[in-house]
Length: 303
Image (cartoon, rainbow, N blue to C red):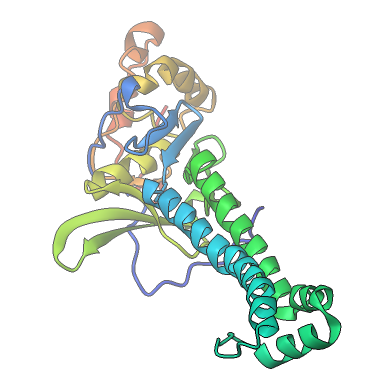
């Protein structure tokens, strides 16, 4: 399900789309599907970030919820029915009225004395509260079971950064919803873990979403720089062995486009592919890597 985007109206100010510092070099073995992995996929077109806030505790909670709902809305009504069917005939036939029934005791006793056991069973079974409780238990258990299934099977919220289109896709709420927005509309923000913990997390939001995704624990500016650098398709790929197989192809793409100006500000150099000068005689690669500012503030040429 794809949600419509709405402008963000947050009272908090997000980080500027800016390359603040040298991002962490992404090695090949850092890509994986584990909860602790920063990235699930990385190439010259997509960067898939693991934004899951899933915890194994959620599956435990789902299972506990199923047990509670089964007891409250299935086992308890059924046991009540069985108890009434057993207790009422035994006590009434022996003229023992010392026992206390929960509700509708007089009508049940009257029904049994006048209509018999079959009518008593029918009346208890057809009672509205019994039917609604059973239906509510069935629906509730189904929801909790599906929650557990989703948490175990599709538990990874993720953010897909598309370098070629400059769009960001956010699969959230256990992958049940999808929000798409341009990269320049997203909101990065340092957020404290708690009032007493100095460590910050990198919060992430797209227009149209309510909850925050967590992209990293600590290293807020470095991780932000990684995503901004990657999404600036007019710059070389970020550092890291995971991008090495794609650097030449990315260089040729930018060369064919005439090396357009960078899209976002940078506080550091973004060096060109190291093999460009030797293989293609590119003498201007080093100078392009030193262009730190947005094209509106630069009169230099990249060619």
